Structure formats: structure tokens, C-alpha cells
Image (cartoon, protein in one colour):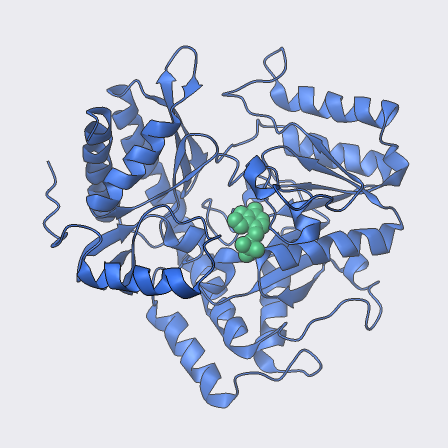
Amino acid sequence: MPNAAHIKTALPGPKAQAMIARDAEVISPSYPRDYPFVMSHGRGTEVWDVDGNRFLDFAAGIAVCSTGHAHPRVVAAVKAAADQFLHISSDYWHEEMVGLGERLAKVAPMGGPAMSFLCQSGTEAVEGALKLARYVTGRQRFIGFLGGFHGRTMGSLSFTSSKYTQQIGYAPTMPGVTHVPYPNPYRPLFAGADQGKAVLDYIRMLFERSVPASEVAAILVEPIQGEGGYIVPPDGFLAGLRALCDQHGILLIFDEVQSGTGRTGKMFACEHWGVAPDIMTLAKGLGSGLPIGAIVAKKSLMSQWKRGAHGNTYGGNPIACAAANATIDLVSSVFADNAAQVGTHFMSRLHELAADHPCIGEVRGKGLMIGMELVEDDAARTPARTLCDAVITRAFHNGLLLLSCGTSTVRFMPPLNVSVAQIDEAVALLRLSLDQALAGG
Ligand code: PMP
């Protein structure tokens, strides 16, 4: 049994409480905060709160701190860039920006030349990808997926459907977006064993009945659904989407904001199935915490964007690009492989936990993008929402930072350089938290 000796105070401690009270007066209450963690500092997979309590961070700033907290090479790259200049705007050229474009072109999964547009966040990358798709195809409609998450600005929000609450109060969003189901083998919507094929047939039916394929600019999809529940599509699904797009001249956009930059044990999740997108969106883990996003597209597409067709002020910010360059170097050389290896160990430890906990309906994922779906009844698979929230709260009090996704899925997205020993420590804390939550504690 692990001990929670690194938690020194009842949480939130006195300093944390004071900070939360100040925040409540001046910061928007719209942030979906689940428990009162007030950060002081972090190193690798460990973080400390302002009262001196230590936690293992298996949320990593929502899959952002890919190289862990304050990785020395990332910090050194940021400091060196900051010493030169903090900003110059994307009207000019500089080494960190060009270097990032070159690195992205090298690792891009397009199977040919690629170009990048740089921005600050996931949602901005998605907005730009949608604009690029309309611009080069001259078409206006889009297909998105139920359960998808692509951001909270008006264009990306039109696709976001992981929780209906994200939509309340904002209609009408962008017209022309049709949602179709995402294939979920654990919760099949369609008859038959192959949910991927069923969804592809459903899209074909849409094309015949209500959405002319010739008017569809792009299909926007997460290669592994993130906020919607860490759902891994069945083999053949992405390849089927690719074939459908090719047949109708539709562009395929992979949103790899959460699944990209090594998270799944390969540089990009789509590489697990060998399927190349036309356009890809990146953010989160790309900058190890510095705000940066990117649209990476086939050069044949992005080179069509005429001067002034799309732009921004901060794109290519030298500090953010320096962090991204250091991150890509670390992830592509070592950390993606570590995510694959450590992820396999983590997955087998979670399967052990599932073996003596019937409330764990499914453990799924790739690399270090792993979801553990909790159910009230193993046979009926009724989502155990209350239990999921209780496990996450218990885990916090035991010194483990977690987040949820989907309806009742605990998700694990630690830094990609997490060690086997830290995985084992986290699994012990998780087991304790699960048992406490089941006992009503
Ligand atoms: N796409 C995906 C797949 C995401 O997971 C997210 C964020 N959770 C976004 C886009 C939006 O990113 P951001 O919060 O940086 O706007």
C-alpha cells in the first residue's frame, strides 16, 4: 500500500486557499476546474503546490508538458531565444521560425513535401485548417464527428461535440458542418462487428441523401478521439476515410493537437495506421508548455495560400518556436520511443487493476494516451460518472493529478519521459483512490 506522506496538509492547504480566494475575484469562473491544485513548481513528472505538497502529474497540463515540467534543454532553448529578442511578428524572418518549419516538414506524416503555418493554440490551428480547406477547394461544407473536440472559437466550436455544455449559449455556430458518429467499438451504435465500416457507410448515405460530396471541403477527425473519451478507432477506419476523401476530392484533416508530438508512442497517431492526412493541426505537446500551434499541410496545398490570405501577429514567436524546436528534437530522438515502451508497461498494469475491479469497463489507448472507462455495470456498460469524479478527487488527495474525458473515463497523459517507477507509483495511488472511491470515501 503506498503512503501519501508527500501530502503534508489537508487539501487545499492554507496558501492554496488564499490564492483560490484571490483568483475567484478576478479570473473568469468559466474555466472547468475540477479540484484545487495550486501550482508552485514542477520538475519532470513531479509538481509541487504552494503549500509544499508533492504530486505526480499524469495530466501534464492537458497533454501539453510532453517533455515534462521544466526540461533543462527546453528551458535553455527558451532562455537563449529570450536573450536575443522576445518578438518580431510574422512579417519578418528568423532562425527559430524557419528551423521549426524545417523540422515539421521532416517529421510530417504526409508522405511528401509539407509546409507549416504557425499560431498559438489548437483552436487557432483548426480555424486556419478550415480556412485553408475552403480556400483551396472552393467548397464550403464539412464533416465532423460526434464526441470530437477541436476548440472553443466559433469555427472549431462548430465541430466540438464532446459535451453539449460547450455549446450552450453560443448558437448559431458556423453553418455547413454535419456531425457523424465516431466509431466506438466499446459502445457500438451500429449493428455488426465493424463499427468503422458502418460509419463509412453512414457517410456514404449522407452523400447520397443530404450532403453532396462535391460540396464538402474536408473531413475533420481526431485519429484517436481525445476529450470525447480516448477512443481508438478500429483498424481500417482512417484508411477508409482516406479512400472516401480521395474518391470525392475531399481533403482529410487530422486534428493531432492532443494525439500528436509523440503522445501515442509514434510522432503522430495516424502513423499507427499508416494513413496520411492532407492537413494536420498541432498544438499542446508541440511546445512543452509554451503556447504554440501549427497547421502542417501538403506543400501542394499550402503553397496555394496567396500573400495576405491568412496571417497573425504572434505566429513564429521566437520563444515559442525555440521551445518547439527543442521539444521536437527530444521527442523524435528519444521520448516517443519511451512513450511506446513505458506505455506498454502502464497498459499492462492497468489491465491488472481491471482484472480485480469490475467497475473498469475498458482500458484503451496507445503509448501514453490511455483511457480507463468506469462503468456501474460490467454487462450493461452504464457510465459511472459519479465514481469517475470521485476517483479523480481521491487521486488528488493522494498526490496524483488526473483528468477525465468522455462520460466516465479517467485519462492518463503523463509527460513522455515518465519512468517505469513513476508509472508504478501512480498505479498504486490509483488503486488506493479507486478503492476509497468505491468504499464511498
Ligand atoms: N483539438 C484537440 C484534439 C484538442 O484536444 C484540443 C484541446 N483539448 C483542441 C483542438 C483545442 O486546443 P486549444 O485548447 O489549444 O485551443
